[in-house]
Image (cartoon, rainbow, N blue to C red; front, side, top):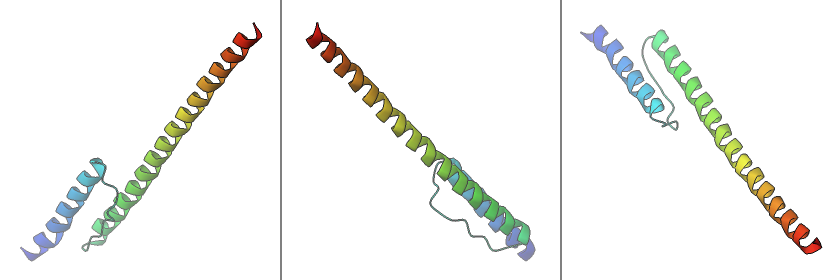
Length: 88
């Protein structure tokens, strides 16, 4: 019983942590006490969480940059049209 709970509790914690990551909750570091294999798995999930967090940050940053570029492009077109109207 003791050995089973020593393994099953960390496995349940890892499962819940993986579900949290899947739900977009990237803030909490996973800390597991138990067999080395489970500690290694927790560290791997932490690495995955960090990579996902960084990737999402870059995607959002790129989207904002694209919006800015689009806005500047539309503004330049508007100014170009205004200049052409005054020249005609």
